[in-house]
Image 1 (cartoon, rainbow, N blue to C red):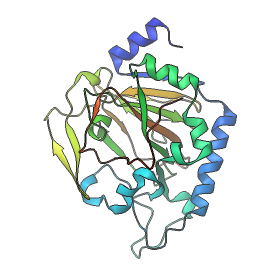
Image 2 (tube, rainbow, N blue to C red; image 1 turned 120 degrees about the vertical axis):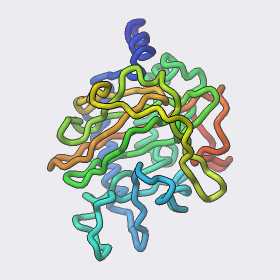
Image 3 (cartoon, helix red, strand yellow; image 1 turned 60 degrees about the vertical axis):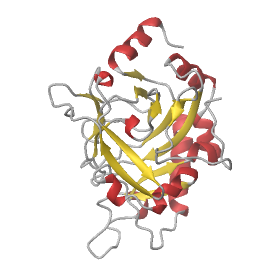
Image 4 (cartoon, rainbow, N blue to C red; image 1 turned 90 degrees about the horizontal axis):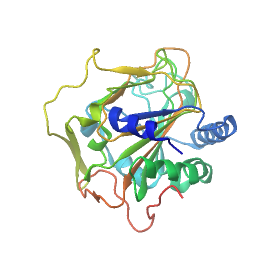
Length: 279
């Protein structure tokens, strides 16, 4: 699928942008399904939010259980001071995660196929295993910032193998919170580990290398249908969305089955939901 130059670019930059990877019909199918999941979601007293800031402090049993479920998480700014939603539920959800690809037939079809399997192998995953899926809404006006991080922080293997497959389901722009990356930053050290100990988690600092500044970071505005692949050590970020336009995206995290998956990773699977690849 990839020519030699694109594979070399990925190795040098740590990311790859493939426009037109998904069709309008494929995108419409997962968008409609995501909205149906949100419509059926009854939060009750559940107020779990998603944030990359102070992740360990806000992580709860609902989050940990989502490893093998389809769970909805609210935006940080979705609630008023009295705990009520500031806007409709459909405009308040940050993301759906984290087993959509294994539990929902629509997302299963979107997440797998010979084209994705071939791509994963060309990027170095000889035995790809899909661990996590996330439907990300980046809601208008309240879409939260996702601070600089490396995905290997959350999916540590020895050697590092986690690779991210990020699909733009709407146009991602500078105004609505497109991805930012540090080209070549995948050659920098792993800065943090998100460590699970029983039912609690903590962020462990490994290296003091600073996150990239404006001199090293570049934005990746892309049209709907684009697939962005990036190495698990690549620093990336997205700004808050203060625009009136959402930025829906879908991401998959895969590792190589030949690498040892850390027992301290937050996301663990038991035999009731076995891991599968892209086939």
